[in-house]
Length: 163
Image (cartoon, rainbow, N blue to C red; front, side, top):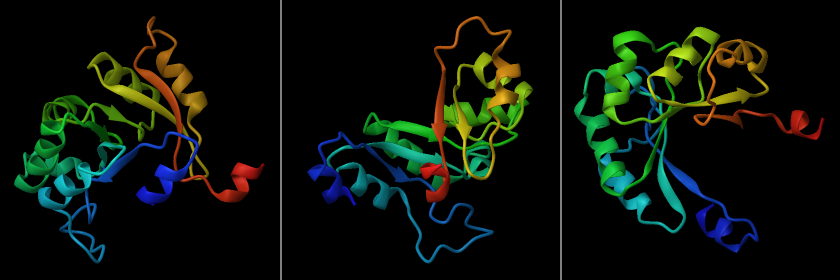
């Protein structure tokens, strides 16, 4: 995939999977990434950071595996993309201290407002599985500056793209 991207007329940037498996105690993905695999992939051309830090429980609890993976990304000056649905309050503070700087899994307006107030970049997501754009409009209407808000897609089925 990385080699094909280099042949494209488009500039394609890639993020390294952060959690393989997503939650080690619950899932088995057939492989296991540590900071060693993440470090190796971060050396590839146009790889700019770490994707979807889904093991938010590991980050919040400063789990050694997640701590080391994020540390490698930070040492490479990489972008650390978050993935923390419904994480708020002190757990959100711990997650932010752990390294992720964005979230595309915000679910409700109050969560969006809190994440913006705490300095997180929030991606308003439209996908085949959920479309929460209208809910997010409620969450940002009282926030005067939207520099940390962007639109994104995730999990979009091919038929929906054609439509």
